Length: 118
Image (cartoon, rainbow, N blue to C red):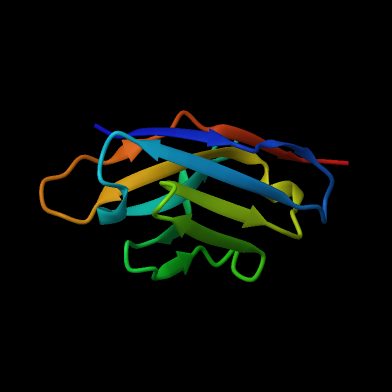
């Protein structure tokens, strides 16, 4: 069992920055790919960024160059640094843990709201 708790959301003006953090507990963090997804009002949940246990990172085209994902295996945390925020980044952001072994369970946090508005 893995528990994921997100923090760091809030209201920010366009062009501003926020840092989201996800704390994981309950299992072996270092054999999970950790990711961030988001869901805007009226839209489907979409991929934002991920980092594998080996440190390989991937980003959605819409956030490349603005967002940076990082993980600390010693602290069981994964962060998302978001810069140059745009109104279209407004969404609930969810932390995801996907096991890097067969037949594992995909875990989700409850989400944290990011609102980009002036």
